[in-house]
Image 1 (cartoon, rainbow, N blue to C red):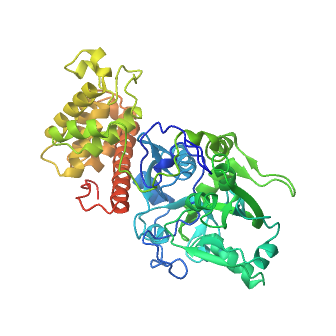
Image 2 (cartoon, rainbow, N blue to C red; image 1 turned 30 degrees about the vertical axis):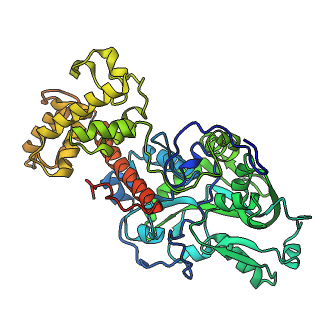
Amino acid sequence: MQNKKYYFPKIRYMLVGALSVLLMSTGCVNTDDIDQFVDGSAAEGLDVSVTEPIDRDYAEIKQDGTIKMITRYSSNTYFLHQGIEWGFEYELVRKFAREHDLALEVIVIGPNENPYDLLNSGKGDLIAANYTATEERKKYVKFTRPYNLVNQVLVFSDEVEDPPKTIEEVAERDIPITVRRNSSYYYRIQNLKDQGTNLETHEVPNTKDTESLLFEISNNTHPATVADDNIFNASNKYMQGLLKGPTIAENDTIAWAIRKNATDLETELNRFLYKHFRFGKVGESPKRSTFLNVLRKRYFESGQQIAEYYNPERSSRGSGVISPYDDLIKEVADSAEVDWLLIASIAAQETKFNPNSKSWAGAVGLMQVMPRFSKVPTEKLYDAETNIKEGVRIIKEHLDHYSYMDSTNKWSFALATYNAGPGHIADARRLAVDQNKDPNKWENVEDALLKLMHRKYYKDARYGFCRGIETVRYVKEIKNRYKTYKSILTMADHNKKATGPGVMGLFN
C-alpha cells in the first residue's frame, strides 16, 4: 500500500515490547534521552534523588558473577526479536561480560524509574544507552572512554520550503525545533541560545523518542527536530520525507555511565573499549575493531532491512509478546502449574526458540530434550508442542524433587539439574556437605560445582569432572532473562494501561 510518505511492506512477525515494532532495527531510536519519564513530566535537570553511590566495584561484581546493564528498550540498545535479545549496546556489553566470565543481566528502565538512581543505588552497574557524556550527567556519574563519536544534526520535513542551510537561518525564520526536555539535544539548543542564537523550541513529553519524532517530521506533524547523525542516516534509509539540516554539535562522545567510585570497573571497561575504539591522529577517523564495525553495520548502516518489518502506522505501545510460542508455552506450563515465563527463558537459553535445533550431545528441539530421558520417539521431539510438553514434564520432575526448598533455591536447583543432570548436582551437594555447608542453599552448591572442575575435587566424585562454570552461568542467565522478560511485560502492561495482574516474581 502506498501513501504520501511511506511504502508499507508486508509485516512478517509479531513485534514485541515498547519498541518491538523495530525488530531487526538498525539504530532507529535515539536512547540518548534515557533519563526521560514515562509519565511525560518535564522536571528540571535530571531529577536525581540518589546522589551518593553505593560501594560496588569490579571485585563485588566478579564475586556476584553478574554484571547488570541499565538500558532502555529500543532498537539500538536492547530489544527482543522472536524472544531473542538484540541491540548494539546489548551485544557490546555482552562481549565484555563473556570475556570476563560474567553473566549479563539487563535492567530495562521502567515507568518513572531514573537510570542514575538505578545505577547509584546498585540495582545496575553501568548505563549502556547511546549516552552522550554531557556536563549535566557528569554531576552524578562517571563516563568510560568513548566507543563512538556522533554529530547532532537538525532534521527538517520535506514540506519546509527552501530548507535552511545554517543555524542562524533557522533562528531568523522562527522555525520551531521539536525536542524532548531531558535530552542532550535540549541542552545543546539552550547553549546555542545562551550564545545568542535565538532558536525557537517546541518541547514534547519525554515519552517521545527520536524515532517517533522523525516519523512525525516525515509526516509534517512538526517542521524540525534534532537527531544524532547515525540515527538519522539509519532512519533515512526507510523513512521518506526527511531532510538533513545543519550540524549543531560535532563529535559528541558516546560512552557508558558508571558510578563515580567504581574505579576498578572503569579500568576493566576502558581496557575492553580500547581494544574496539581508538582515536586516530588529528584529522583521521577513529580506529574500530572488526567486531565494532560489524555491530555498526548491523544496527546503524543496514537500515533498509527494517522496512521488512516496520509499519509506521502501528502504535509503539508494547504488545506483551515474548516469543512465537507464548500461547503454546502458557498452555502447557499452566497445566503443569509451572511459571510459563521461566519455560520461555529456558527455551531462549537452550535454542533461541529454534524447534529444529540439535546439540552435539544429541539433545533436540526447543527445550533441548535428551531422547534417552524422553517418553516419546526422537523424531517427535522436533514437534514444538511435543518438545515443550516433554521439557516441562522434565523440569516439573526436578521442581518436585526439590519441593522442600524455598522458591528461589528450588528453581536454581531444578535449572542446574536440567542442564548438568542429577548426578553432577548430587556430587556438588555431597561436596558442599563435606565442606560443612548447607547443601540446600544454591550459593553453596554453586561454589561446589566450580570446584568440580579441579582434579583435587572431581577425582573423588561419583560422576567425575563437571564443567560447573557452564551450569552456574546457565542458571544465572536464565534467572536474569526471566527478570528482564518480566520487566518487559510489566512495561507493556503499563503502556496499555492494563488492569490485570502482573507476572509474579520468583527472584525479587
